[in-house]
View 1 (cartoon, rainbow, N blue to C red):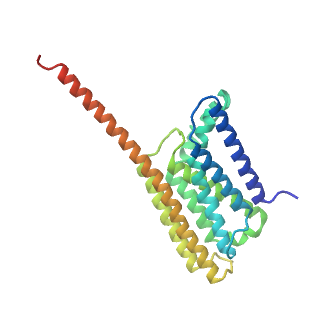
View 2 (cartoon, rainbow, N blue to C red):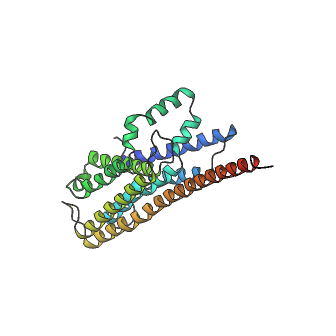
View 3 (cartoon, rainbow, N blue to C red):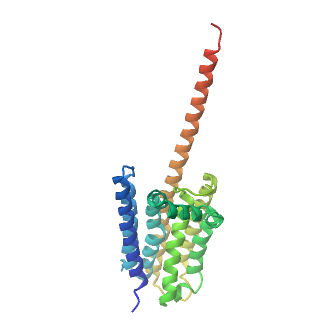
Length: 265
């Protein structure tokens, strides 16, 4: 019998955590620095993926499903992206695989795919398709269930990666693009949660209490994760502003020193 999608995803998450920690150990042994909190973030993200995949999670059927969605599509991606896995790969891979990875990361396809509004559309569009069409009622079928799992995890990672942009890419989109995408995705997520509070997904028969708890979890849990991503953007804005100010101060200092040196003696 083939492994269940949840078990397969849990095994892949644990293998990814093991590979990441092995790579950072190798990096430090050769004298390179790598913050320990990134190890903790990646390991925590993989643990969230594994636990949410294996379940069962507490609450009624729809509440448990929504907790799983929140963990797989939002919490785990933030933790994984904060660990900068692409940067780590570029630092530990041999020359030839590193060049191949850079070619993919800097390709036109990857550049378009991580355009923040497009990543938000792929992420939130999939959720609206899942909950506002008969697709959710069909997730009892193994293949549909597995496809939904893959899409939820992949689109969550893509959106978080595109908005945070912590790893090196060919085109770095400005804060305005990324903040707008985050705000738009947050609004679409909130509207979807409110609509689920009022009306269940087509073809389902959850109890009212279960439906309300699941929708509230989606609404408030999504807010918390989106706030965490907003903090990442705020820190980037603060750091970039500080660099510009320091550069201007150094330039002003050089101009003043030149003027004093060239003045009347």
